[in-house]
Image (cartoon, rainbow, N blue to C red; front, side):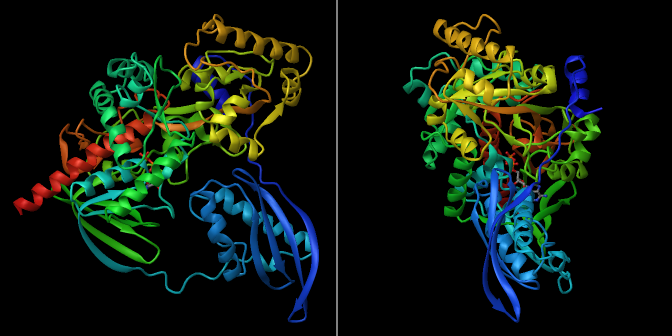
Length: 603
Ligand code: ADP
């Protein structure tokens, strides 16, 4: 039985049609041209293409029967800072090794595979047998690592949103900070966040005249969204510190002045960048600049493996890169390793039906911080709470931003009808989607939204959308036929009338209804639920201290972000991951720096 069918049973008690999910790794080549000769063999040039994470990756290859001379990526739209790393590094690696079996770039497997497949396609066009290049390169010389010991006040594991925030904050307090990041890039899942940051009672809300979205409402919406199993103290801390966190971001050059509503909330808290850019890449870039400015040492491709303990106190970590075995002694340790949404072994311990689901998570989301924390006595909470996001493009696991709905987008099924409050909580919308024929839906938006939202412009550029100048035309482009076309046109007209009236009588949607969907052209993307956020994790208190199974803080050990549990309860509302990592990243950074300074003074 498919994961979706299992989930329908788990979530709704209703059995829906199964839908198989298959990855697409198609490749094609377009042209070949004769060229010069080398060593007697005929050297040729051709292009080949293959599907990357965001559309086709096209390479131009110069080769003969025995040698790859050149590989140039001539076209690609891969995510800046994620797939783009593979685009930068892999052609050189293939050329150096003369092999298509070189390791993929960690965290960029889809793009790496696309580049390799595009090269294969180009070779095929030239009539060159790829077999000589399908041999794995010889292993490195000895594989031995040299030992190195580093000392600092605060060591942080993970350079995603929480780790970078904690690093900037601790360094601001004067601590000497080292961050280890196992991937070749910083940013983790945070880099992929497309929406915004929820915050209440901010100066930006006030400037926009939003007076009904205060701390109380924010707490209430977060608790309701999380089915009341959230840790109220943590939620209160997050909400009460959210406005100051927004101010702090402004102070480091990362203002979030636009304010929208988000799924599952009744008020406008979602703070976004002015220019409509995705919040994740925006904040990761600004936080990285700040961290660099403050002299934080960031070790990339360096994986933490263990927390060093002196009795009951955390005093550092062990970590390793390809060539170095690090012992990093520190006054305090912060775990900021993110969630475990890419670790199917860990997830299926809690929910077997997720085994076949696509994930929106980056490859580094493997729950390492939880494993390392538990190994030194940390407690965990809500590990079984794993969120499905309702708008995931299944072919590549790309998440279609919740902002599309916040700005007025709607969902329709294959009969051309709306089927739920499109901006209810993520779990509710996912469950409703899984009940539809085929367990999928379409997200519908218009040119007005595209003009305001950079993510939408990318979806179009990368071929995720179908579009038309009329509702009828869009229905046909979506593949709807017969009554479904008429239904769709009626749905759109009814929706626009509901927006005009300010009331959604059909499904009771009460936000993201400021403007209708009447600006042609119109767009649709076929989507279905995918694994998104792991709400459970290490138990922390409001000071971001990790709590042991005995119920006491573990001295010297802090955690923040998705590696922790309790803030989001049974379901995270959109915009709260960013609020969580900024607020608790700052608390962890501040407290770890203060603790390390005290320990240092006492020594
Ligand atoms: P958060 O939003 O909580 O910051 P992210 O997913 O954005 O979570 O960031 C977590 C980061 O931690 C990722 O960049 C991930 O690669 C990194 N990470 C995970 N495990 C380890 C580890 N064992 N050593 C170093 N970095 C790690």
